[in-house]
Every structure is written in structure tokens, then in C-alpha cells.
Length: 86
Image (tube, rainbow, N blue to C red):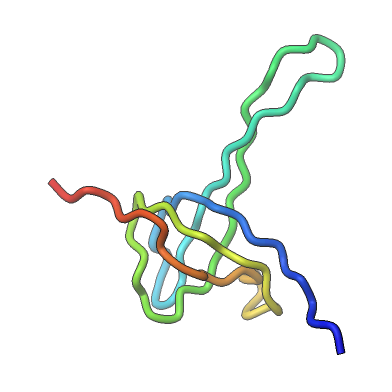
């Protein structure tokens, strides 16, 4: 039996939206089809954080999973880099 391969991406935590939930932002650039200029785009995802280990500003790795709720179908794999607290 072959195991399903789920997409994994790195993102930045932009808000802590409740218990076991975070919102992350994935920033990328695309080339405009007509003018050729690179334009910034952003995707915001709701992510399931089972142990409440991520905080705002952290760089995290998230992976697709089965839907956990109406908006959450991504889960936190690990915190790649913690934000510096001042």
C-alpha cells in the first residue's frame, strides 16, 4: 500500500487565533502576464497546532491533512525558527 504524499511548506505565523489554532502567511512573487513586473502575493492558512507551541513571528513548517474544521486542513509539523523576544 502506498502512502499519500502531502504538500509541506514553510510559513510565518501571523496570529494566534484560538486554542490549538494559528494563522500563517505564505508570501510569494509571480510575474504579471502582460507587464512582466513581479507582483507580491500572499496566502493565509488556518493551521492546527495541537500542542500550542507556535507564537506570532515564528517560522514554521506546515503540512496538508484531512479537514479538522470548516477552515483548517493544514497541521503544524514543527517550529523551524523561534522569534526573538525582546
